Length: 511
Image (tube, rainbow, N blue to C red; front, side, top):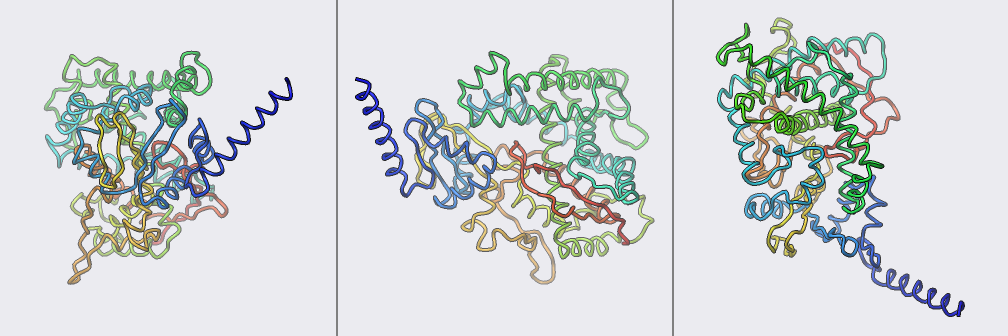
């Protein structure tokens, strides 16, 4: 009897192996019985962006991923710009964030704008527009001036110290801890972090925020039942998420309390000595409405913080890496700065340039856009269908099916950007006809770094202003040299951050 059982078992194993081999002879991604394609995805998870680009390139830009049986993980992945346009614009109402996305992100983003749909999303988008468009020029000037002052007070002295001591610097970490986090809090709350004391250090709050994002990204590849059970039992990564969220919530609640106190002492129309409205913090307009709870304000704030801090840190890190490793591009940026801004003159208000002056830097903006094309700050996004649909690529979408859009892969597709798609080439963004360098318009579904359609990033202009202010002030004063042997590769998070940071040495520039 025992031999019969062993024999039957061996036959089953042989049949499974044969079926696996036969069914996957020509498959782009091998599919296992019961488990589907999940084993290969788990294997390739550390290099998911590169693997997705390979698979999408082999499959013509759109691929159907089959998850384990009964897991609900059958996903359509695409890098096709026409599919992007269809999902985000033409059939926008059929592709909300969906319940699956809300489940994954709710413990991090709550009911904020990034994770909301329909009326709640529309309301928050309208509130953001009111915050920035009521006095658009004043707000953009406030962004530029506040960042410039912060650079003079903190970041540039730090770089000067690095040149004196010749220490290695993790530029990505320095940008996050000394520039983007503080500046984001200033823009959201109107608070200068250096003026207040908190329970934990800034580094601990940043680590907590990064921990939350890391856990949420892992929820994408784990069966929902598995991470839900972890959450129920408070073990593993879900326990880490709860601890990190509690710590960061304490920080945000204190910021909200400080902002309420600040607003109670300030008249709506009162201006400071610089002529800037003291209530320009993006959350101020919410706080004027007494009906909003601190819990809701916290959700709004953490979404704005994720958008303002992470994307700027990531974009700047890849930009400075490109400049440091491409001397010809660095020389062209510096030449343009001398020509358009006169950066070799030291009598320019400590290096502050108005927004209309920064807008003349066409090659600098082209370099920023080319950086975003190959290293998009938000490398992917996904939506869930409500009804059955057919994509322009011909792929059928079932009701309640997730569609994964890889912006990283799209920027590296020959059929989208041509044979030189992997070449870093700012000139592709500039029209040089008749000697007038003009920026080339590219439709958002082809260049989705600021997203597409009704959900297009409202902070696009703010992000570009900040990048230009920082680039000009840093590049005219300092040179960056990547430490020999340092590995630069992406980390798998919501944003396209560098896994091991950006280790550099700094030297003074003779400009």
